[in-house]
Image (cartoon, rainbow, N blue to C red; front, top):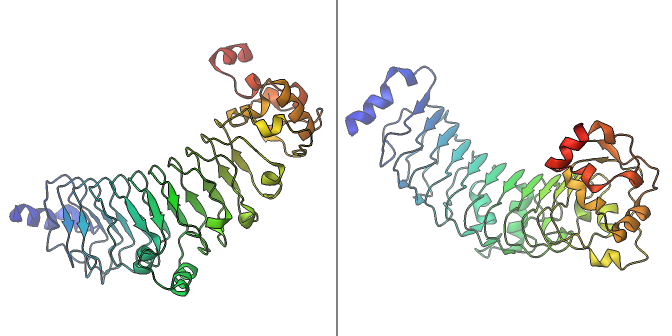
Length: 353
């Protein structure tokens, strides 16, 4: 085995580019004498179970380590110190505990498709303050905290204010609890994905205040109302809430988000009891033609109650569609039907004939 490692390390194909590919070699440990001038190390699809102290220390040019699809269960906190590593991929391993380690040059960490059950965002960013992209999707996370170590509130706020986290993906877990205020103060946070979890409360400004979120995904949860997002009204452009249990859409929910471009409410509870029984509803969408596709089919339900709702939203003669099928481009709201917004297979034949 040792001879094989040395042959792989110093064979001519890897030296000119300083990119070392040791994938698919049944390696059980990180080779001890990897040249310190490598820029990209691929150890994916092996049998490695742990990354020890100093295994990746002393690399002055190393940018990326790919350790996906191994059998990793632990990483020593000093595994990557004194190196310039920017990106680490730990996807598809066997972590049950999040592998906290110290690496102050790290920008991008992927730890998806593991069995991680708990995560402390504060502790992670304390040791990795320059991370901009973090993916821990498709794990078994049930709760996410921001200070399980019970540090002082002022220290937590300081870490948050200095963090440069931009993209956070925690979709595909089992999260049913988020600590209030968990994302407050992450001023660079722009993309937040919490889809496909077990959240049953609206994660609004009590959780994301003082951020700059422009894309927010809460699809495939158990949320029953649109969250209060006035705190990101100036930055929010995309809000994905499909496949929830939302039954009420108030005028305030939309009016407080003047720059929202994409609101996906498909596959929710469309009977909307509060709307159908309210004679005072005032939800105005005039001057906002839609990109007409299946995301908006719920708005054109054939029921009489929904026809009345649409009449209160927009003048009947106003053109509904800015984008979508060409034949819809001049059709007024009053003439538009659900089957035209979202034609099924049998309708497609009719529309094309």
